[in-house]
Amino acid sequence: MKQSLIILAIAFCGLAAGIYVNQLTDKKSKVESSALPGFSFPDLAGRTHSLTEWHGKLIVVNFWATWCPPCRKEIPEFVELQKEYGEQGLQFVGIALEEKETVETYLNTLETNYPMLIGGDQAMALAQQMGNIAGILPFTLVFNRDGQLIHRQAGPFSKEDLIKLIKPLL
Image (tube, rainbow, N blue to C red; front, side, top):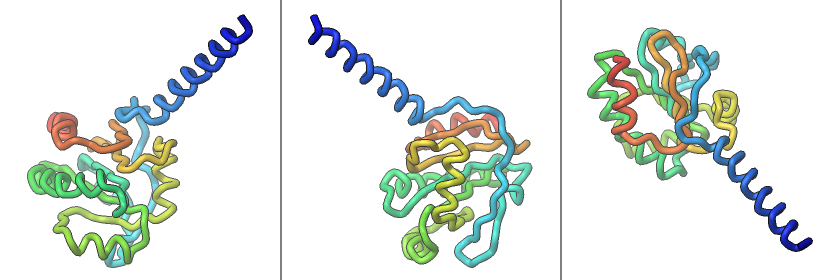
């Protein structure tokens, strides 16, 4: 009897922990309406940018790192979507969680058509502030033309799912 109670208690604790972790890492989190975060990060040329620079556009902010395979897979897809929908008001903004030299070396192997900002450790703090409590990469935020956060995605964002989300908003 005592052994059964111990097993039951352990199972309950495991279930509770699983539910908690699932809530932290929910890939398609429900989003509370919030405005564009106030931050400034430099691009590869050293020019400082803020998201308010693209206010009035549909903004997709992607936190990424060169060592993250899903991040590297997304970038070419984002380049295609920027090319296809940019004139309709879509703006991608990449925020790298690494130092300039590492990011620059990696991006020299790719053709990109949207701003890549260097955020380092401050970018990870911003991602956590914006809901990435578990520190998952890639981490993507979508802001509507009014600057309201409408979607938060922890983990990879399929091109098809992103198109379904952005097309009605363009």
